[in-house]
Amino acid sequence: MNAITATGLRRSYGDQEVLKGVDLNVQRGTVFSLLGANGAGKTTTVKILSTLIRADSGSATVAGHDLVRDPDAVRAAIGVTGQFSAVDNLLTGRENLKLMADLNHLGRTEGKLKVQLLLELFDIADAADKIASTYSGGMRRRLDLAMTLVGSPQVIFLDEPTTGLDPRGRRAMWEIVRRIVADGVTIFLTTQYLEEADELADRIAVLDHGKIVAEGTADELKRRIPGGHVLLQFTELRDLESAARVIGSASRDGEALALRVPNDGSVRSLKALLDRLDQNAVAVDSLSMHTPDLDDVFLALTGKPETVTHS
Amino acid sequence: MSYALTDSATMIRRNLKRVIRYPSMTFQLLLMPVVFLLLFVYVLGGTLGAGIGGPTGGRAEYLNYVTPTIILMAITSAVQGTTISIALDMTEGIVDRFRTMAIARVSVLTGHVVGSLVQTVLSISFVLGVAVLIGFRPKANAVEWLALIGLLVAMAFALIWLSAALGLASKTVEGSSNVGLPLILLPFFGNGFVPTDSMPTVLRWFAEYQPFTPFITALRGLFMGTPIGNNGWIALGWCVVIGFGGYLWSKKLFNREAIR
Image (cartoon, rainbow over all chains, first blue to last red; front, top):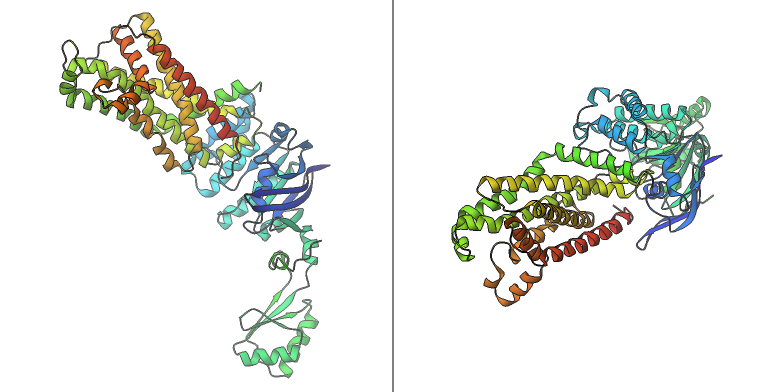
């Protein structure tokens, strides 16, 4: 059973086409990450799926309800934590949560219990009666997400939930997301951080210029690009040139005095490489090993939009 | 739709809390009519009072003449708060949250409007209190008081809907604090401070037909227990037009897509 399905979503702002036909399938109870650079169309996708704006064409269902035919049923099933803080800055943390409890039509006692539970779960109990505008960035995000959870949504949209947070805040947010998933909720997460998608997502779709250019698990995506490489640093151009002659298959790493040499990372092949350099008396300044990570996938898929092969 | 009332009540609570949390705005909005009252009565009232041609023609007479105008200004000033707070709300992301929730959409606006109405009524009462304190003595009977309250609430309600639309139409919060300025100045281009017959022809024509003139005339008559002719009905008609127009405009603006 899919929590989210979308076919051929298109959307333009003026004459700029932001989404050029996006298809999505998100299984219930999983974390799905939409990965893309700024301006790729992530937020537009979330806005469409959360009923904030309409797609120009294409169709989608969320939690089994059609976006256009039954937007209120969709709204009742989802929770959204956007990129920009959606808390009432003049209310306290507790009042913000209480507001959500009232708008979700929870009873007085049920609402109170839920509010207290979330305050503690999200580590804002100590500041519960302080005005939200005095909260730190990380705390405000936690309150924001807590507000989203008051209505016990089946599907949660997190639009760049950790943008602007410091590393500690980011890790805390990840921890919270993992806890939510454990309760069987479906999460649709957008991010521009590959590490984040790698950490949290069951499946990842790479969005580039309004199109999905790749989709799969983190491992599947990593497998799609050539294996790892060794990066050799030189102090002199002369050394670099002679090393390039000796190795043959190396490629220059940008403008830096460095060579990328394809390598599977085994000790045997590494030793063979070093021996060859040694025999030819090439002075290498330093060496580092690189196994493929999502960054490589991301760059390979989105770096040169013209040459990307769509699959 | 069955939750429209509950949701509106929730939103009204939210907005009243916001009013209490941000008292400097209320104070600022209240300050203007009070300053105008004192300025017009004590600084200009002696001379203007002689010019309006009443039986005694003094400062006391001018106080009776200008108090209804100042009360109108208490409304036009208070509704600036509606414009600003709605514009502020629209930039804060929480409204997008509301839009993605299964709630009665109109409740977001109702919350603001009813919250503002409460604030405006308190503002009117305060300004009226100050006027009485410095010597304003209304002669209205019970029926006239009821008519006064009705007219004031109707005008407040109408201008609040208009201001709500202005707030929704504003691109920035800074911009929203200026769009209501014409409302504040409008009583000057009418019979608010001096009778219209002292004005040049074109201005007089405008002054006599603009919505605030019959309203102020009706308020004066009701406060002083003198006949108001059909000014009360004309004023009420304007309230309906302004209020309904403001409501439709607000609704249209609120339901347009959030592109920001």
